[in-house]
Image (cartoon, rainbow, N blue to C red; front, side):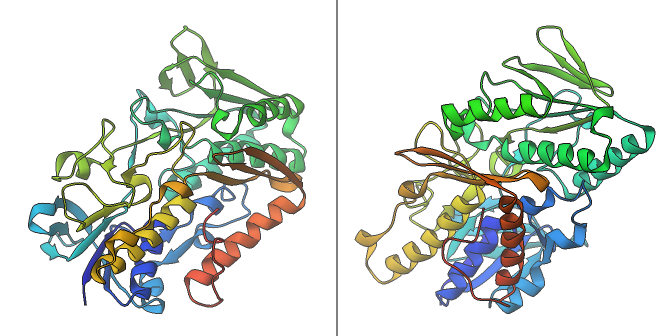
Length: 399
């Protein structure tokens, strides 16, 4: 039985461990956290529709129910030529982990911006979402203020932009303040350095997004680079400053420091791991693979790193390794046909909007009222299916 080592306990890593354990491999998942944080439903923490406990799943419990081993440790070094990964435990112990196959699913890190410490990210640590909740309610108690929402880009690799969760947080907070009867006490501002943020969803879809901004009285500043963040706002390169009492900003993803500084893996300019169409890392003789945010994904100009793609890639890796073992390398699958955008954008009590972008078309389907509850249903399904309490539905695992 081959030993498969999976690095990373996020959506992509957990699905990768599932897929390989289902093939009867000896699977060990390593993560520096002992829980899976479900980012797509964490958007409801600031509006108190969800608590921290509602958006996490214990990795130990997931592992036991799905026949793989979980190890809580921090990855310090990847030595692919030796088939070793160096990890450090909480008590300071260092251990060498060996493997037959390695799947890297550790994601990336947020790009650094001057003054980033004055902002809070929708895709950062769980503690940041709790801080957004607390800051928001402080402003409500004070009687109002200005909240700025934005996201950044990575010129070296545009696939790591995290715009969707920022839009979702903006809409949820807007409708939450309206529900409380205090929306008129707040100014909501959106900002981003791109000329047309959201364009990867489709040109017409992006235009509709900004029409909706005007409808709900959200001002915006786009197409100008951010110079720095300050305690009371955002300064742009054109000299303008937007005053802000709470700045919610999600930077683009950059390559993980372990990839850049402590591995012998081939990387692209941004520090993501290079892969071929099978998700295998070139030069490793099909022993090392990378999925999700860790990988330098190929495809159309509008491609994006999303949870559903990370899950698909994890399943493809499991099938490809099985085919290699059975001597059927010619039948290996490519992830490229699966590169598309699917996003159910939650908009709070108003509902939601389903965005779909494929090689052939870009769709935007408004789902008033029902959209919000469909995303709630997905959250319930995701948690219970991962714990083996209900059957899994193919293609319904990540939003």
